[in-house]
Length: 511
Image 1: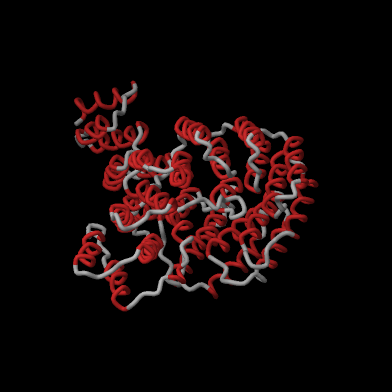
Image 2: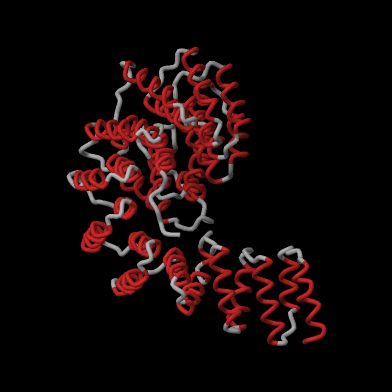
C-alpha cells in the first residue's frame, strides 16, 4: 500500500555503481571522444544550435545536416559525435540515430567500432531489438562486432531472452571476440534475473577455463547466486577467493552483498560484522553506499545502525536527494522510530526545492499501516497547505486508511480522485478495497456512485463477478433494468455462477 524502500536485491541489480558494468553504452562510447578537441567556429556552432532547437520528434536532423553540407559548409565526424552526445543526453534518441545513420552513409567518414556500437544501441532504443539484430549482421569488421556485441547482449538480457543471449555468446566465443569479463557478467545478470542461479557457477567456470579475469561484479554476482540458493558456505568460499585475488579490491558492495546473504539465513552476528567492515569502506564522495547499509541495518531491526549511517551520510558532499529521504524514512518507520522519522521529514521540508509528494507518502503510508488515521489525515492536510500535489499513491493510501477506519464517505472521495488518475499510470486498486466500498454503496443504496464506479472499473479491466453481483442486486432492488451491466460482463468475459443466474432471472418478474 505505502511506498517502501526497494528491496535490497533489486536495488543492487538496478543502480549500485560498484555492481554495474562500465558497459559500452551510447553515453559511455560517445563520451570516449574527447570533447576538448571540438573547437567550433561560429558557423559550426550554428549547426549544433539548429539541430538542438529542433524539438519535435517528427522533424528530421538529417534534412538540417544535409542542407548544411549542400550549402558548402564543412562538418567533421568529431563535431557530429559531439552533437549526437548532446542529443542522447536530452533523450532525443531518434535525432541522434539520424545523425549516426547519415555519418555511416558518407564515404568521407571513417566509422569507428564505437560509432557502430552507439548506432546499434540507438537502433535498439528507437526501432527495437529486431532491427538492431539486423544491423549487427551487417557490421563488416570484427572490431566493430566486438564493440556492438555488448549492447546487443544487454538488449537480450533486458528482454530476458536466454536462448538468443546464449547463442550470441557462443558465436562471439567461436570468433574469439570475448576477451573481457563484461559479456560473462551480462550472462550472469540474465541468469540471476530469470532465477537460473545454478548456471552462474558454470559461467564462472567458463571464464576461468578461458583465462578471463573476474572483476568485482563477477565475484558479487557469483556470491549473490550462492545467497539465492541459501548456500552460505559457498558464498564465503567465493568471498575468500575474492580477498585472495590481487586484481580486485574488496569494497563496501561486496561486504554488503555478503551481509545480505547472512541476513536472509538469519546469521545476525555475521551480518553485523560484515556491515561494520563495509562501513569502513564507504566513500566520502558518494552517498549511495550509505543507504544500502541503512537498508540492511533496518532489515536487522538495528535502530542504532540506521541512525548512525544516516548521520554519517550527511558528511558527504552534495545535496541529499528525495530518494535518499524516502529511503531513510522507510527504514526508520520499519524499525519503529516514528519520532525520528518525523524529525527527518521536517528536515526534508525545510530544505526541499520542490515539494515531492512521494516523500510525504512514505510517512503517510506508515501512519495508515499502524492505525494512526488521525495523524495521516493531519499530514495529508499539511502537505496540501505546503503545495503538495497528491498522486494516485496518496489516494490509494488514504482510501485504504479510511476503509479500515470505516470513514467510507471519505474513502469514496479518495477512490474517485484515484480513478481520475488511472489513465496516467499503471496502478490499479486492490479488489478488497473495491469490494468494501461496493458493499457500503449497496448498504446505503447509492446506485449512482455504484454505477459510476463499475463503469470505471470495467473500463480499466479490473471488474470481477462479485462486484457485478453487488450492482445487479442494487439494480434489482431499485427495479432498474440491468442491460448495461450484462453487456459489460459479456465484454469482460465474466462467467455467471448459479447465484448470478438467479439474480438475472429475477429481473423478469420484478422489473
